[in-house]
Length: 338
Image (cartoon, rainbow, N blue to C red; front, side, top):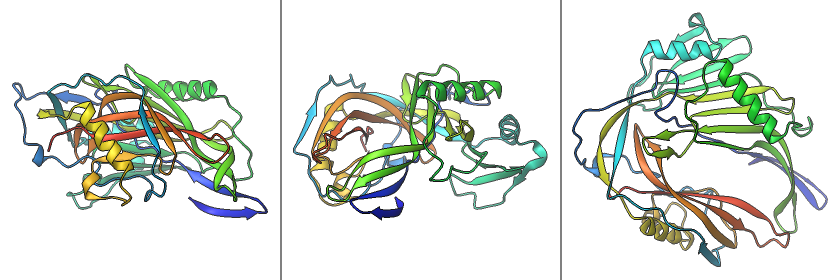
């Protein structure tokens, strides 16, 4: 949060919501999955810990008065497959970059420390557009600046934003195959907040994000394969992709859904941010008064150069601000027994 401006009883705060992008095995361009044949159990200690520390936007001040589980838990297999990311080859990188509007002549290769898993290996400029490419297959193409704060809110409906994003990706040969879910939401917004209560009362959305999810094997990836950001004028200002080449590595034992839920409950009862006792969780909100969990699922998440299983909790967070404020809750818990 930044650029806070106060005005009498109300204030304005700029909220930038960042979405990370993760591909599945179903991208139409260069994404592959390879198998080593017969697969055995692997030592989970050799894998990076998912969500090493508890990332919850800060330390808890308010402990929720109640956490309700209003859904059935998913069946938990004893073992689940783990994948490893292979480094993208130059031919695939140049193919995707060209589809994003950056010809081979615009790509500049960068020599850097090869130990970095998110190593940026190419960048490119084509007019006002800028592209960054990482060795793990992450493409971030920026086509325009964020709108000014006084530009007014976005005028397109949610459906119109989805259609525009789909049309752009399909016309560039980048629309994911077998999309399992489409999610939308504000990325950059100006919020009016009440100084007396400390809670916002009105939002003006400046940019909107559309995320396209696919599956890895039997389970949905926890983050989208393709992401498109649209500004107030209906222009596409950013497209992010993760085109991954996956190798089946082996199986790991996983926790039950009940054990993961207990871990999540412990997060809310701990007042120390990033406490080692509750590492392995990531949530998007703190300091709400009540929480109702309405969906629990197993998903795949990128951790280092590995794709590992997590439990994904969704629900509604209720804020005790006198205005009946609610927000969508999202919590992720490492599923691997380490």
